[in-house]
Amino acid sequence: MKVLIAGGGVGGLTLALMLNARGIDVQVFEQSTEVRELGVGINTLPHAIAELEQLGLLPELDRVAIRTRRLIYKTGQGLDIVAQPRGTWSGLPSPQFSIHRGRLQRVIHDAVLDRLGPDSVQTDRRLVSFDDTGTGVTAVFENRRGEQFTETGNVLVGADGIHSAVRSMFYPDQGPPSWNGILMWRGATWWPQFLDGASMIVAGGMRHKLVLYPIAHDADRPGEALTNWVVCARLGDADTPLPSREDWSRMAPAEEALKMADEGQLSVPELDIRALIRATDEIFVYPMCDRDGLPRWSHGRVTLLGDAAHPMYPVGSNGASQAILDARDLADRLAEGGDPVAALAAYDDARRPATAAIVEANRSGGPERVIDFVEERAPDGYADVHDIATAEELRAIVGDYESLAGFASPGT
Image 1: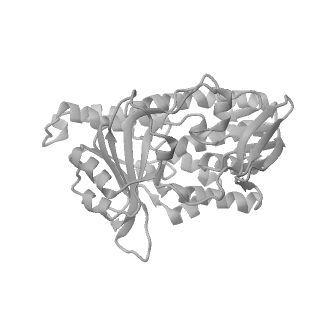
Image 2 (image 1 turned 120 degrees about the horizontal axis):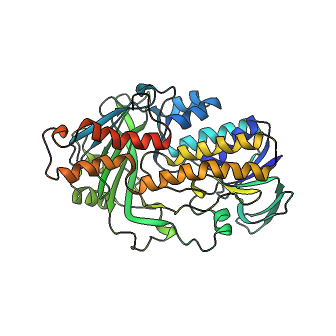
Image 3 (image 1 turned 180 degrees about the vertical axis):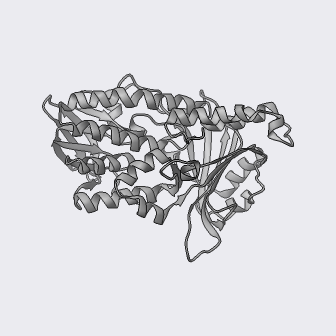
């Protein structure tokens, strides 16, 4: 069997490693001209890290990332709501990692090249068409010079992101991604570490929010961490026109992010967010987008994976994590050696409902809904959060989401 993968992101590369580990031939095609360490910070959850650990990647992840120790939810003005231990500190067998997205992709990419060979990832290959012949798949890719390349395999997997070409060929009338009116200003810079150097802070609800967490340490910079930050602001609603694709990940001046932080009155006592923003050299702006669920991902010998299948709002740290879980499920089913069409259908039946539930939960804030819950009850603040809500109420919101996403700790 040979599997063609369109898309060399976290999901596609993880699938390549998992298929190779199961003795299945695989080829990855990435439309970018090179795999570079782009993006900013993300979190990868323990159940997904467990899968990467099975692939032998834990030592390298430890080298470039931070094991997340604690997640603290706060109001937008920095009042504590609830704090949770994370990963192994919560009793789970695997850690949660805070990491630069590009470094996570690089770790997996380098492992693919090392194990599958230097030609296993073909760059500058944009999928332009495919044909399911009934006995196989023929896919046509094009480079930036307009040259075309035909590849054949038994299965094609579209792991090509929220703007997936594979998805659009099955659903040409799907329209643009859904936007909830929220823009995110994101950046990362070296900064004196806060708290224990391994904690996350999420402060503020869906109208104005601040996210802070360290994503790397360096022995040459003691007492500092590469600190990832996000300022979110709701500037419209579901009827507001989506920014054009050219405006996704555009560069922004610090004044834009500072203005949004000031309008939301965002602050936390752990660090000076305004000074952190001013010290950041590169600030990127992204719309918070997802897509409605699909009636099916798998069509014969072709299927979808990761953001191509289930793009979701970036709350709850589930985007990359769910792509990794997709890869494990799909690799296992293909490794059973039966009919590939049946394997893809079974993968669809298992993973599509599970991820659809997370997409819907994220639309209402996911676990961060606990912040909106408290801010609505006490808009003017409080001396003690338990005067506003019981520990059981707070734990239920966060714990229910963790159970839904599949990484609840033993004490939840």
